[in-house]
Every structure is written in C-alpha cells, then in structure tokens.
Length: 109
Image (cartoon, rainbow, N blue to C red; front, side):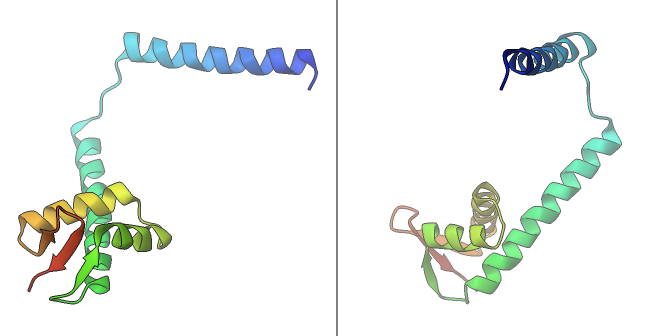
C-alpha cells in the first residue's frame, strides 16, 4: 500500500471514531419504548430457539457435559452465551439440573 492510501485509511478510521464519540456524548441516542420492546422480544425468540434445540438434544433423564452441549449447539450456529443463558433459565424453571460443579447437565421431566 502506498503511504497516501494508508493515511487516507487512518483518517477515515479516526474520523469514524470521533463521530461515534461525538454522538455518544452530545446526541445521547436512546431507544424508544417500542424499539426496546421489539429488541426484547427478539432476544426472547432467540433464547427460545436455543431452549428448543437443547431439549431436542437432551432426552429426559439424560446427562451431558455442558462444554459438549455448548460445542454441539455452536456448530448449529447458536452463540455459547445464548446457550448458557437458556440453560440458566431452564435451571430456574427446574427443567435441568447441574451436577459435578456445573460441568454436567441432567435434564429433568
């Protein structure tokens, strides 16, 4: 790359950083109530998809390592943080149980 192209690229990156900081400090963009509700509903749908795939993967009464489950669902395109959050919620609803210091998951009825 020539020096001119590199300096032009740096200027664009620098200006985008400045624009972002300006917007964060001066404009203070906020989500509207309807946008926040829509965003929340989309997160719930994503988590419900993860729960459905977990339930399909684990039969009632079966054990599986948490790491293995997360890896398998990651191969299906589900982010590991989403899987963990779905497992936490399923644990709160008493659908799954953690064993061996949260390394193994048992699916309950």
